[in-house]
Structure formats: structure tokens, C-alpha cells
Image (tube, rainbow, N blue to C red; front, side, top):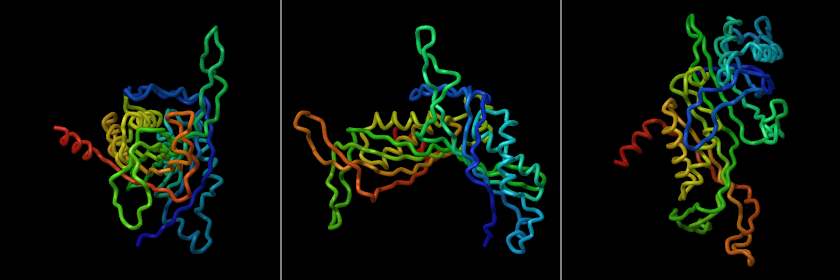
Length: 317
């Protein structure tokens, strides 16, 4: 069995002002997002390093080749100033390559980041409202993320894995969803619903065919988390979904249709639909009262590739 052996640093908070703006974004019907100014470019980084040279530090307590995790933190922060790109994925790959270029006894790097969102705030400007170039609001909403793996292969440093992500998306649709026709047996207590509110927590991952698209260097190649988010809620709005499973399938199909540069999209969804207290409020024809659901919650995991998209096309012929 291959030994697990790595160590690193987590919660490295990086804030960079006036990074390169993100442009050349592919326009899609579901989203008005067209780029990011990157006046504030922030993320929380985690890095883990690998290499057989570190075995002696575990076995014998020999720290001769150990790079202190505090040094790793400083390394990441220093290179935040050197990075000339516009994407989180590009920055993580840039730092990972620099680690292997600097420390010859390291053989692999796994580095991930959660982007910190800062929202523009409109301020009065010449009789109208324009985004302030100076003041931003720290966002506690969903977060874009990325994970990059870089290996030393002979005399080359190669990026072997790239995953971009959108974590913590929370969407509620007040009506227009259903759930019925499932297995009924002695364990079933859930009533069928033909028009229910649906509250979902959603994590979405996607992989590029070409890592250069993730760097934001190719024309229309970068897939922004904001656009993935907009596709998710647009499809949720459009579809009268019979299940969360079908909903995430339709979201995945739309993402792959809009972005041919992607190889795969993955989902982890949680059903957090509220518990109904009053089916009808007397003064309202449609109003209801809900509360938080009991702790056990359902979840769904699903991945799609371009093969699924081709199969979908064939089924429509």
C-alpha cells in the first residue's frame, strides 16, 4: 500500500489589492457576469507538500530537510505579490510550481483555496449611483474555490489535477417543485407533494479539459463561479423539478452546454426543505407558515461528463 505522508499549512489568509482584472469571459444567456475588477483579490489557502525525503522527520525526528509550515505561509504571501494573473486557479498553480522549483526534495504539492468575496457598493456619483472603487462589503454568501495538484515528473513540473468549485450555494424556491411516485412500504411516512417549496444547499465542482483555461489566459476559456451560480438558479427557476436528482442533472446539462471547455461537473446537494406548520393562512390564498426541518437531511451526489451531454442530445432526436 502507498504510504500517506504529507504536511503543510492551512488557513493562510491572502489579500491582494489591484490584481489583474478578469476579462474575456464567455457570455451566456443565464448570467450578466462579464468580468471581475479584482481591486480586492482574497482567498484562504491550504497547502500540503509531499516527498520521500520527509520520511526521516517522521521516523527519526530529523528536521534537516523540513521546511517549516510558517515558512510555507510566508512563501504563499510573498508570491501573492509576484502573481501577474487574474484567477484563483492561476494563483494556486503559480504558487505550487514555485514550491517545487524552490525546494528540489519536494515531489508533489496539493494546494486549495476558498475565494473571499468582496461585493461592490453603489455610492452617489454625479446624480446617479456607481460602484465605489474604494469601499467593499465582505460577503458571507457562497464561495468560489479551487484545488490544484502539481507533481515532479523526471525533469518536469506538471499540473496533474485541477478542480474549480462553488461551495455553500443556498437556494429556496417557494413553489413549483414536486416529489411523488417513490417507493411506498411499511417505512414510508413522507406524504407525496405535487407543489412544494424546495430549499437546497448545493456544492458544484468542475474540471477543465485544458488547464490554461483555468488560468484565465485563453479567450473566453475561464468559467467564473458567478456564471455557474447564475445557471443553477436560472434552471431552478425554469424547471418544475420532480426531484433534486433531476434538478441537479438539468443544471449539469446546462453547464456542459454553455462551457464546452469543461470535462466534468460534480454535485453534492442537501435537501433542507422547511417543515410546513400551516398549510394555508386564512387571509391569504397562497401563504403558508414553515419552520426549520428536523436534523436528519437527505443528500445527493452526482457527476456528469460530456458523454452525458452527447447521450442527452441523442435522446432528443
